[in-house]
Length: 390
Image (tube, rainbow, N blue to C red):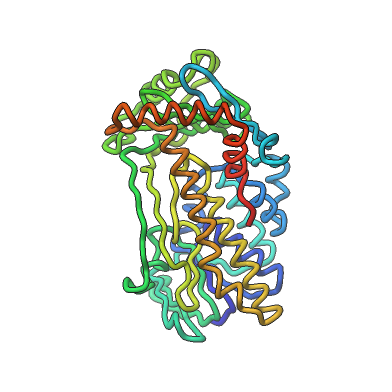
């Protein structure tokens, strides 16, 4: 096979780039190791910054998002028995976020690729990257007993943390930064009315909690748990009881509980790989960086990578200008590290750390007190939460 751009990874990042490039006449192929059903079965975050929502509309995939997504102009932080609201709209100059499940977003992108008859190959096994520093790199993959080679101009590695793309960069070139947090998030999805129309981030001595939602009839809740905990350790009843302990009494009193339709534990980590380009291989999304979900930056950081790659590819193919491709890694990483800082700050401020000393706890309390006593601090939070400019 021959194509201009070979995209490895059929998640939202790879599909979004594929759709954007196709609309501009740039031929591309997407390879995905799993089946479509598996990809669409993954439950992920659903807070989209305004820049991501705009990119979805540009990709002609935003109609259902605009119809069914929840526009949020603020969120709450619960602490010390009180609830304080962060007014995103006021402090970000009129911006907001869209709450729309990643599963639904991915489904919209798949539907768009189907409509345009885009090439998305599932169950692609033994994917390997070749001749990355040459003018004509290639990718090989296997389906059953048949091995196929794709010759291309560029390879986009959007295949996640465990994918083959980042591992194809020589260890002498790649530098990795990582921070592993001593806890995880136990998440439950339930077919219940959300306890709040806006998200509630809760700081509590027993541990962090988050009240989120996918729609007005689908709620997503999380509690901080030790890394040693397993899903089997937590019955639905135990989860709801612990969640309610960590919320203000008036919130717990109005919470509607029900059977979980999905339950999982996600460890929290921060990770960045540099550079994000090696020869004609470009990394995007979780293949290059991961953040704790506290600041809702994960999927949004991936979207900024796609924005930079998309515009760099347009300049290359339409005007013969490769400066965007040359500068991609530095430009993407500058925004990635700002997202890392924001996620680290939110995580540090709101979670209970098992090894923290009294000094650390006093700093957490002071951080929250300062946040809600300073318009400048709230403006900084809002600016980062709705999304820094691309």
